[in-house]
Amino acid sequence: MDGEAWEHYFQSVSTVGLLLRGGVLLLLALGLTALLSWPLFALLGFPMPERLALLFFLIGGADLFRKLSQERDELVRKLLRLKLPGGRKGVTEQ
Image 1 (cartoon, rainbow, N blue to C red):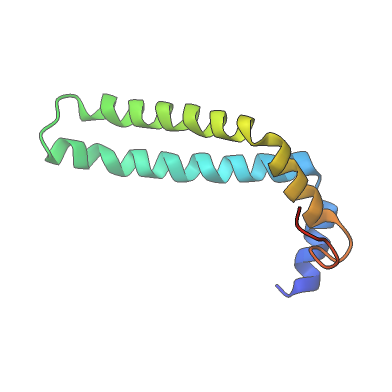
Image 2 (image 1 turned 45 degrees about the vertical axis):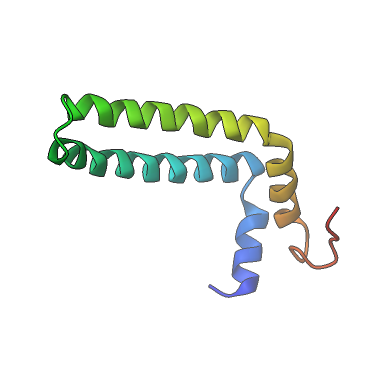
């Protein structure tokens, strides 16, 4: 995709849609990491590696939610800046 195609994409998707897509991608990455940690925990000899992997996923998800909640205003501001005509052109950093 070229720059104009990306710009059109960001203009067409709502801010909530971008947040949901980003959150889903982060949760998928966290889930994959937790899934890969299961055999590692078993290899290292931890008791109940499946519970440790599940705990890793749950704590990671809670931490992700906490961080996104704390930085919500900044994240929304950056997403709205993506939706401006011209993307980042003409926008100054604060």
